[in-house]
Image (cartoon, rainbow, N blue to C red; front, top):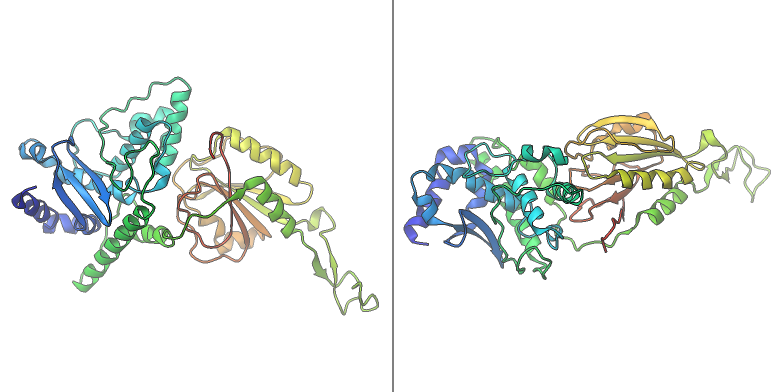
Length: 407
């Protein structure tokens, strides 16, 4: 890329009107290296080592009719980087690479209001397959795969490769990737958000407004915390639930029962007792993430497992996506759940909600792709993850809801 073209791009990103509207985007773009690449249709991103490259088809933007698309395409590429499409292992090894590309494109386009070239895929075009606003890329991919398996034709529409191999991999077919790429890309995004906030405050403007890929930047920072840790090993969910409930039912101290060592000290030295009757059984909240991550088959399997536990614990079901929709006593079945919006794992752990239900434990079935409380809420918690990738919560136990075909 010529120096003149590179300078032009930097000047475009640094224009006051662009920075004031897209301060976080400008901070991320400033950390990317633009290169001329006639092999991409419009623009794309790749990574190598500690750098992220912005591949630009200069001839495309050299046409006056295409120049108005520059701003929107730049936002699109930043979305790919921020959402982890470039480096996150959960987007590698997809059985249907074209549907993964489509899911990435839909997610990258969702929050862009600037014009984009061609006929870019939007979530509204795939509502018939269950695609909704606020879903994660993996959720959308799985819904598209399900639609194809049911015999539907899934049209990729205006897809073209925006995410290139180059972070140690050679594409989405599952080749080996650089294990440090994910950490480096996440660190770049985290630093860019922090710098944008700091620069705005130092300039006297206070914290900058606006969102980044549809979210408050503070939420991105929350989710980026702890993502540089090594991947964890996850226990199978059924064994984890059995162990979790067994610990909840451990003996408790009570003055109503004599101590074995001091039987004559009733009311003075407490004895130990298991939960003796239905009214005294441990209370367990089973939270279901209804953002689209749980299939009917999975809900049926969860219900079968909890029917066995119903004799020893009182189970209350909580259906939640970004808000709590329903709370009800478990009656042996789980049907189609309410919600199907985005994901926020915090409402179930709000102090007022926990105080109302007073559970001895919480089991949360979720994909983990949403904000969670930064601090341990003080209740025993088991996360049963449908997608155990990059879940950075450092409190609670973790288990894996293994799906058919997953290792």
